[in-house]
Image 1 (tube, rainbow, N blue to C red):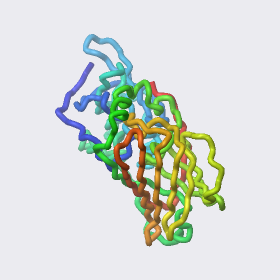
Image 2: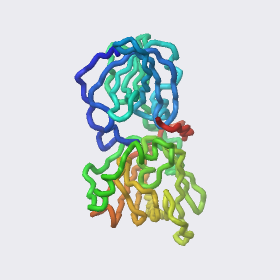
Image 3: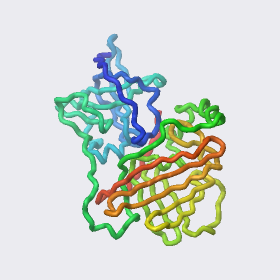
Image 4: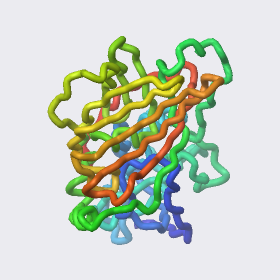
Length: 330
C-alpha cells in the first residue's frame, strides 16, 4: 500500500470533550493512504468512507475510514456528504485499528481538488496548503429576542468538565476489567443509552414545558427524558432513564433521578448500580444565552464517594433537534 508515515501523535482527548467511545484500539501514529472513494455512508454514530487502495504487491484492498465525530456534528460544522465524490481519488490521514482489520480512524481527507474535509473538528489540517471544509463553528447568540423562553428552547453544546480519576470501589474495578468495548458498548448496535451517559453528549438538547412535566429531548440516540414536577408522581419500574422528580429553586431547576438500571456510568465501561442517585442543577445565566448544568452522582456499590461533573450549552438561534439516523457499526 502506498503509505507516507508522519511522526505525529494525537493528544488525548481532554475532559472537556464529550466522548462517544474510547479510541484505544487506534494507533497514535498518523499515516496517509491514497485510493479510490467507492462508497460513502453518511450516518451516525460516525460516517464511514470506503476506499479502494492498492498494496505494494498490486492487490486491491478495501479500507473503511471512520470519522472522528458523528455525521450530525460534522453537518453543523459545514461538512456534508455532498463534499465527497464516489470514484474520485482521495488521500486520507488515518490511524489504524489494532483490533479490526480494514478499519481506520480518519482525521482529514484530501479530496483531490485542493480542498480537504476535516473529520476531527478542532484538529489542525493535515495538509496546511489546502482549503478546509468542516472547521466552522456555531456562534452563541447575543440577541435578546428569545429571552422570554428561558430554559424552554434548544441548546447547543459548548464544553464539559469531568473527573479524570474516578473514586471506584473494588467491585467497580473488578466489573470494569470485564468490559470489552467492541462486544459490550451499546453504540455499536445503535442501542439507546441511559442515565447518566445520556447527558454525556456533544449534540443539542431541548426542554419542553408540558405543565406538570418537563420533557427533555436529546438529539444523540433520539433520547427523551421526563421530569415530574409533582413529587407524588407514581414511581415506575427501573428503566434506563430512571424516574426523575424536578423542582424549581429560584431560577435553578433541580432534578433528582433514581432507579436507572442502565449498567454504565460512562462510555468507558465504568459500571453503575440501580441504586445510583443523580442530582442535577440546570440554570440559565442572566443574559439568557447560556445554560449551566451540574450533576452529582452517588453510588453506594461502585463509587467510594460522590462524583460531580458539569457542562455548558449555549443558545444558537435557529438550532434544531435533528434525527439521529444511526446505523450499526462493523
